[in-house]
Image (cartoon, rainbow, N blue to C red; front, side):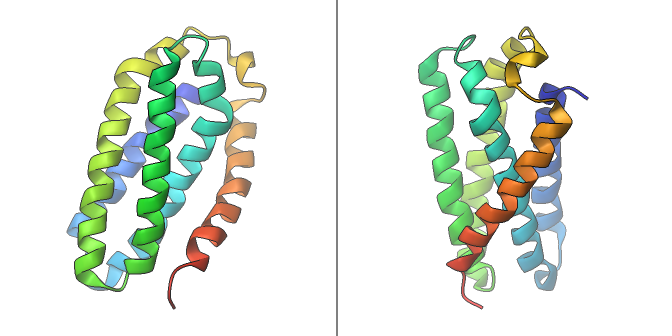
Length: 153
């Protein structure tokens, strides 16, 4: 699977996690918050470290700057989500806001960025898609430790 297909699959996985969250009983929602944070953190890591530097060569830089800003907003919402995962009203509001940001981000990316990246040689990313996923998974673990450190127990 090439890297663009990996990113699109991660988009579908995020949509499925939001759907699972909406349909889950309340006692399962705190764990789904963690799964959402893990999935979105990994996805953002891949984009910021490998995809966006290459994307700047084929997509307007301001579009990439905006995507990075959206990632910052998502990171803040994920930290809030982890802090609020046991506070039902705050958690629900945060999930709604996060889902809106993520849905907009994914739609714009699939429309504006990813089709253009299909034209780029896979070697431009520096690693194979499996190596990128493996490296991002390691980075995700560290990022999750940092995000979770601020969450109450």
